[in-house]
Image: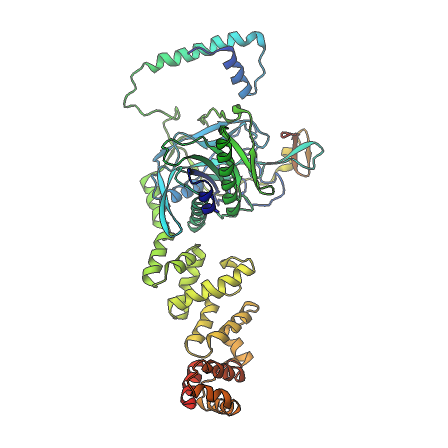
Length: 95
Length: 485
């Protein structure tokens, strides 16, 4: 499966990545190459093999339900561009 | 409402599936040790993990897993021995990481079901899945001079998203399902169910199709409905909109709509189709979750008797009719209250049920209180019922005592003594009053003796009035009957 220039632009938009127009073709080629490798791997017989969700063959360790983090708002907000009344301020996202 | 809709659109069938987000009642967040308490000052419960700062890693809260499994057991679902967390990618300022950790391909709870009751008939609603995920923060769009304020206290709060099959055929069925689920999550103690605080939220997938058609119509999703009343209204509104659109030659587009409770309408929320392209993939920061048989057995042992089972038992053990059994199992606290009352009062279960479904619940509703906030505990109410049972007071006087108990902390006995409400069973005293009344009302006596039985009630009323309601009604009837012969 080969990606088109439009596919590349859409993926970049979804990931909020700014890319230069002159690089689009190169990205399309590189990404298509990765997909081609996937297709090649897809030809392997994997019948009866359970897909791995993680390369480490272990299961998730669980944490006890305890509040261990104290309020550190002032420290976190010291590096925020803009705060007010304890809130982080960001450019308005709805019209 | 639903029936009127059926009358209006007899040729259309409504298809509804619900996605319900239940906030799990853990103390700390799903992937961090920050507190989840509601109402804290903004961003005081958002730690480095919740803020998505570089270098942090999520660690899964055991209690959240336990609660999800508990829910799965309560709906007789398959519990996945192996489930996987995935990243759902989208950009919004109240989601600092740029993705929400959720479950996609392998959710922790699989196929289950719940039976609902609508208009006297039972119906099984399939539950496709329930999965664990983290909540996002909150955006405040007003009052910040053109900017948006972000509070991340809610970010990372554990949610259980419960997805139903498209099995409901009316807004009424959807409400019945939602109510039953609301009762269940509180019953098993995994969610406080507080809808004002957003602990229990509902998205509805609604479509219509010509009656008899197999294929589903195109659906619209109505987001974030936060009350039972709005679910019914929002769905009915959306159904009307879709039918009108199709009948006038239009086409439904698959989209997300927002219900506006003020205008009672739904409107399109997201126009860009890209917004729904979440590019899920397994979260490399989290290993698969395994739920062992041992873990499950431990939870199963702690699972309380479930609402449907308890309702059935109330029917059988206490001979309650379905209506009373329904009301008394509407919450676990109500059911517990009832059983304590029966035990403490040693009165007939039916009498206890009637006092609860009548006076007590009416008073609670009027004061907008939950049973757990009742000013009259089951022990105190038991004290009152005992006095009715041993004829110390009549049922009528009991209502007066109930009033007194509602507004004080006194026991029934204290109020009866203090107000002198003890029933008069002394036949001599009753006879004296009756003699006087018979003497004063010769006309009515004549009427009664001429065969007008209705006048009897007049005499009972007169006696009760003269004795301030304290005479034993049985005695009054007996003596009156003899004397009027």
